[in-house]
Image 1 (cartoon, helix red, strand yellow):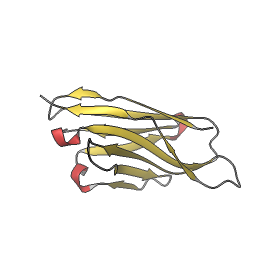
Image 2 (cartoon, rainbow, N blue to C red):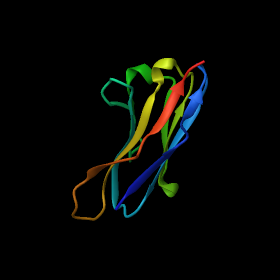
Image 3 (spheres, one colour):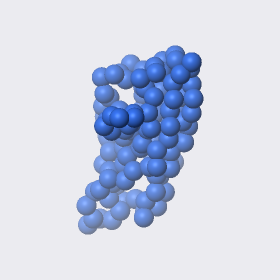
Image 4 (cartoon, rainbow, N blue to C red):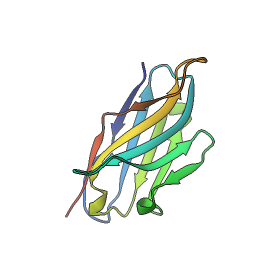
Amino acid sequence: QVQLVESGGGLVQPGGSLTLSCLASGRIFRINTMGWYRQAPGKQRELVASITTGGSTNYVDSVKGRFTISRDNAKNTVYLQMNSLKPEDTAVYYCNWVLSTAMRSLAINYWGQGTQVTVSS
């Protein structure tokens, strides 16, 4: 069983920064992609950023130039550096890994429990 645990959320003033971390534990055979989603109250969950094992990154337009996704393979951790935060970034942030746990197993989605990010003065 794979578990993802997020950390780093909190309350920050507009213009501030936060770094989210997502640590994976358990049996991991192959990782396809790692990403961060967010869900604000009354809104659908949206993909914020993703990174492939090859290092290719993808960002939603609203965070381009402000957020950076990165990973540390040795630590089984993915990060989301968030700068110049805005009130509209307020949401619960979830990490998501698409991975397989064995050679013949299909890659499936794993989710963290979510961490609250609140941007307010």
